[in-house]
Length: 400
Image: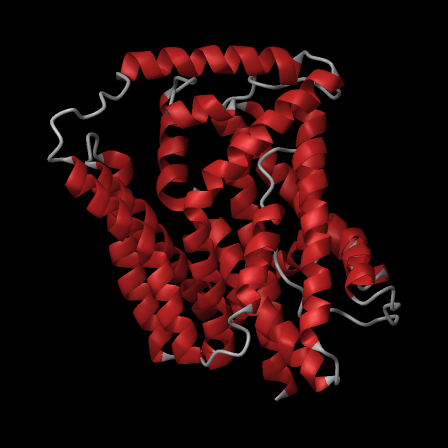
């Protein structure tokens, strides 16, 4: 039993580290490209290798690994709840303090380090997750599926209703969108890449506010994945390979991948088609990733390989913040000022190098201390300064 429990924990740690790597691959473009330029979909780089990488990232990476983190956040809540009850502690006060600390970290991160912070959103939605803490697995599943489907259903309905309106809004042409994207890229490069720290703070605050409101449409999806993770944990689905895991791989992989291919490869999709591809395809493909990872992890040879992700996974909070700090030093004017100068293909290589260093750093750190530095601060606030016993690992830490 102890061996199975340990294997489950290392699986979650490894999956968390794997998700952290995928998120970094998706996030790095936001450190060197204007938020508005990305919104307009302007292509700034030529070269077949960049096109192939961006196509691959759009289909396989973008949005999926953040949803794995969302899944693990809900999974982690149940683990923490079970651990607290086993130790005779009241779960709700502990979790509330944990979320408040996460919210404070997120605001500081978003304003002073990087506007694309996700911690703030996780903290806010974490309070909603508390409402479901006593729900049975079946109830969690129903709410999860409902939340995951509500946005595509509403957008599809709105699209069908608006299609009868003869005064439809005329979207920007591709040329105009590209021109606007180039304009914002040049403006932001002058600020982030060459401006003063005060100018960067002002622009980052504006981008943080814009990014915050842009994320609101994804709140049902994120909360839905929270609840899916909680459901998986209560049902012990990842404890061993089951029929449901294989179904997730087959159904989620085939349908999810097909929808992502449609969204990325087919131009001129109606808005309802894009909504279905984005809000249904991404979660389905995400669940397939989780299932594949769990199945492969059962094989000893592969487990030895995937185990390297467990080191940054155990320090995911610290490594997530370090990625932002390092990218700020690389791309912003108070560092090397590489903003807007690194092609996507080299961004990928940079991510691989930095993440490899984080694996080494995390392994060395964890040999000496049981928690990462930011995890330790987070735990001090969560438990009102209770010290961490030497050699004790926190296996139920939440993901960001």
